[in-house]
Structure formats: structure tokens, C-alpha cells
Image 1: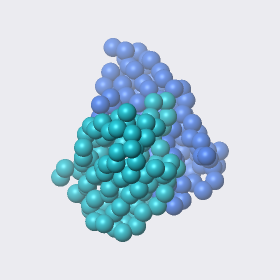
Image 2: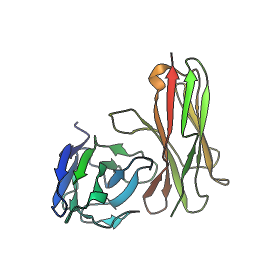
Image 3: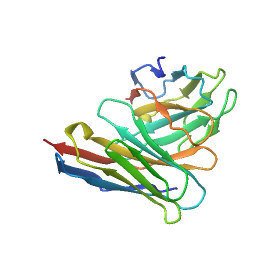
Image 4: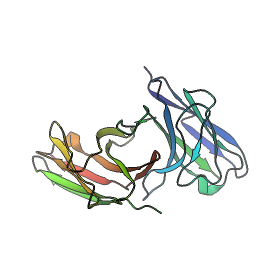
Length: 113
Length: 111
């Protein structure tokens, strides 16, 4: 099993450009999450999904959109990138229910200039 | 804004010392408390998930306790080893599957 994978690993964008980050998991997990991690701050939840076809806003959703068309994939989109979105993005998946831990991907480092 | 606070922010201990960290979280809408270990250049890895007041979990030399009524959890490491050096994160899971992470405690174990 590959676990949770993220594509790409690194990316540099210019302000105003758009891009999509892909998260894929092969563990048949119901729940998937997108976080951003910034210096001096904890992981902050952007959006999450509790099942195929469902999405919900987290703590810092502005400027991002997500889609969960297939159970194994969770896409994070930036329609018009801003320098404030420079961050490391982590995806995580979790079996259904709160008694299970999250499994994290390796992260995507995004720089917006 | 929901605050999850961890203390201390960083810690240096000698090999063989025992140590502990604190995670404080809101006592309302509690669903679960998670502890993760995060090594540099890697992804966070789960240590424990606790759901009940008074829960105690143990994995080798690492253990954790949970007090949901007063909103805190302790992580203990007995006989610290250099390989224990990492950042330890706690996460408060609120009803509705939302996670709120603390900023972590960075542990350095000096050989």
C-alpha cells in the first residue's frame, strides 16, 4: 500500500495563477482532510470530506475549493493564488469514525510569488 | 477561534531523562484527543487517540493521559532516547469531524 500520496511535492506559482493539489489514498478511508502548515502555527484545517461527493469547510477555507468525486481522491484547488497561500499543504485520511487516527501524506510545499 | 495550546514550546533533555508535555483544549464539544509524533522532513504519525475521560494509553516508553472535564492531556516519555527527538502534536477533534491542532512541543534529546 502506498498510503496517502500527494502530487506535486513542490510548486512555485505567480500571484493570480491557479492550480490543483491532488491527494490520493489506497486505504479505502471514508474521511479526508486538507491542512496548511505555517511557521509558528499548528496545522490548520482548510476543508474536509466525510465521504465521496461530500465536502465541508474547515477553519481556514477562504481562497480554496475542494472536490471528492472519487472516494480515493481529494483535490484542493486554488483559483487565484495569493502570496498568503504560500505554505506547506498536508492531506490526511481517516477511517470513518472518531476513534481512529489520521494518516498524513508527505506534504506539498507551495510558494506564491 | 478554538484554542489548543501545548506547553512547553520546546524542550531539551539529556538521554535517559523522563519528560512530559501538556496539551490544553476546550472541554465542550469534545469528541477525541489525538497525539502525533512529527519528525523533521516526514509526515505526522499517530501515537494515540483517546476518547474517554480518564483514558490512559501506552506505547513502549511513551504514555498519555486524558482529562476531558478540565480540558488537558499529558504525554510522558520515560527514559528519553535521541530517536525520540521530534515535534509532538496534539489535536482536539470536535464533534463533526473537525480537527484543531496545537503548535506542538519540539523535543531534543541530547546524547
